[in-house]
Length: 103
Length: 465
Image (cartoon, rainbow over all chains, first blue to last red; front, side, top):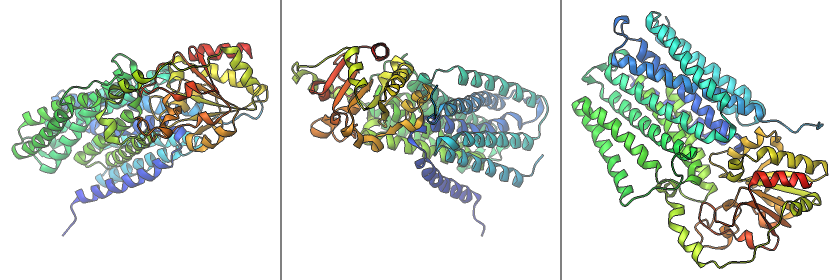
């Protein structure tokens, strides 16, 4: 008897929830806003689903309803990926330590 | 072209990189590197997906163009957005993830062959459940975040909107959703699928409208969590490890943040979700109180007190964000430091409109992060402190939370501002804060009220220093 692949995916899912739990508790409270923007950016990895949806069918019917929804999802996710990572970058760049000598 | 196994390995790698991205946030020094890991992870995931599909015809061209359009919009927003608008930006971004999840689910439903989910009108039951859950959670995230965005942006009133039977209606809609998913699996009729999405859109609106302005930190964290679960649902449908890992990470991250925020207000999660805090309690507090004497002062008094203090603690709140006073505040602190005053900042977990909101604003104003402390770290220092400067905060300093078991905020952890030698309270009027409770602190002997706009008052103090 082989184990259903679903069970494997479920295992990954459950274990990652635990990883997430411990990793997120170790995030310093002052970085909670960047945490939200970066989790938001990485959840846009949903774009991989959108890419498959948009490109996977035959070339001639690229404007099938299914493909169009894929393309729309690509735009939305792309806004999020670039916006999310860059705004996080911008925020993190502002966190500075005390300067030794003040101007 | 890549084999399925190799593809899975690459998805695993990006999943690990995403974990490292979150791990980096444990300290500001490692955070930038973490963000870089996140970007690499995303690039790998997108790159191998394109290679695996192996379609480099017209469709690929569209893909590039669309990514370029979306990417430019995202980049533009990321660089233009003022830091004070961060809460609504995050809410807006959540709505996009939610909608993207809905679109991908629709696409998978319309064309299941592409994802190996069976055939149209004969989709595997497990996949149907996963995709309808993904679509439902995505839809709730979308409309919920749109409402949160409108409230934060001030387009919609921030107060809570409640009506009779609201919670029963939500409960009923939730049950209907479960039934619809069941019928969808049984009959494979696409009407049910569309109905699920429409009801979820409606439910998203209904869930968020009763929640008022100052509870927004919980809402944003919660929607963050939802967007993760939606991604995980789609991940299960598409049998994609990267999505499952990310979904689980984001889902648990948002859930933990919601928990921290609820704890910061000493309220249960359900209490916040069911909404209507300010609405119910206002009457009890405002009527019974008579006018009590209040000491008020001007900028010169405040400047005198702070200049002669040896230590000052600053307590910022949402009012500082509204008045955009963070830069003026930093300037004031600079002057004080030149006079040899020790200045630190104390931040309450729920100050502002999202987790970490105050920290970002202070960082923007070039306040070094090692001068900024969380509630537990600094609460004992108030007793040894000469002057506390409360700027735009209110409920989080109210001693009633410790003394009056009748008070709705009783038990909420507060900053022990009243223990310091004197308190300067910048506020426009004596009106109660969000929770609708009078702040005892206003009437204490050691409190000096500074009635003015946060930014203007701070600037005046700089002048008199």
